[in-house]
Image (cartoon, rainbow, N blue to C red; front, top):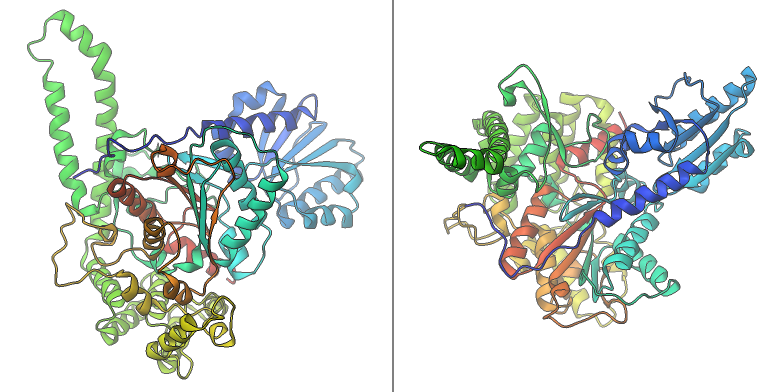
Length: 625
């Protein structure tokens, strides 16, 4: 049932040092503006900041009042204003308005702008254009990594995906490289670095430059190997419905940042009255400290109720021990066990309530039909029936995001839509949800998420082109034939070569999963995780040449730093850091935890943000609507 760690699993590094470093740097920056000051904080930084330095710590360093950035005239009467912001043009322009309004009113104040995780030239150019460059001081708070759990670190950059993969903006690449360098400095040296994707290659090269320029300090490594992967290497996985408990909680309740939905902050969820069985909502931090959650977070949802029922029985047995105790035993029970049992009881009640709420929404006939359609698309069966289901979904005006997700999954798994299907489905979508979304289709085509097949782009033709490339001595370079495959998914060919879809004639026991496919009810092994498994198994990309061609290349494997202990007996060699550039899902994290248990690894996931199909597609919709 609930997965437990192997006894021989290595210990994970302690990431509390990352929090201490950023806290100390923030205090130093605040003290550079001596005296009382008011602090303006951007909304999506407020709760992450609270984890690093809460209000009492800020007060100790002469922060008088805290305000949320709201793009309207400020009410502060302080003579010193400090702004803790993301490097966004809109925010900088608002600050320029504040400063210029003070000038017009004859107010004389000091202003300090602290950009996080870094400041960009474009922001300073705005300050210069607005004529206030000399009136403000600017600084950088390198808040690159936030520990969300013992094995998850986030760069807190939900905009990374849209900026890099859609707009081609590379400004966050250096941030990712710096974050990797920080981890290398504190927990390295790394023995081996693997990666795939254009962005991963750039991050690796930036990291390598920083390592070569910096001072090498000899210390015991706590992380052995690193794997970098671009989100566009595998779009299928985030488009599939999540069915592990943590993924479902995120999909339905939105595990988010305190009260601000705009952030990619992981860990805090608000359970409403339907879960708490009262008239109040409760905010809960979901991480490994919650014993009940930690045991069910990676479980397929079909197993969760059985576990919770057994847990309730065990808890009742523990309570019943009180009967027949003498005074001394009761005193010991109250001081040693009762508090822990009560906390576990509260956690259990909440997760039973959450499971019941999920059950109401996700076990209806519609959801079962949805899963059946997804599985058919992944297997390549009954495609016409799948298209009919999607058409009905759109015509009934069921969730706009769900319809778009199914269209994208259809396109990727079929390597593009036939022209007549593309035109028909696009027209039906726009008729159902509005022509405002016309530009969304442009973005989806640009990303390769929803494309029209070109003449000759059948799977057999595509595979023969790739086969020719693999045998070509100059396959290391992008040839004209290879360039023509850009933004093509080649999913069917990849699925066969990597056995991503288990044979459907075998019954899959979700209570005793045999591979990572359990996270999608045994229907599909996530491509991203399968690649990681295969490369670690081979300790290189050797033997995966055809797979990498199908994925448009940009794979690499390089030795890490000199001085790294390469001995397999060294525990650090079994701790693998995986960096997802463009976001990763809770399903992928669950799959990697499963792989770690099976192979004796421990995985640390570093991501630009936690994502799912809704977040991924909402970013594209928001870009145009």
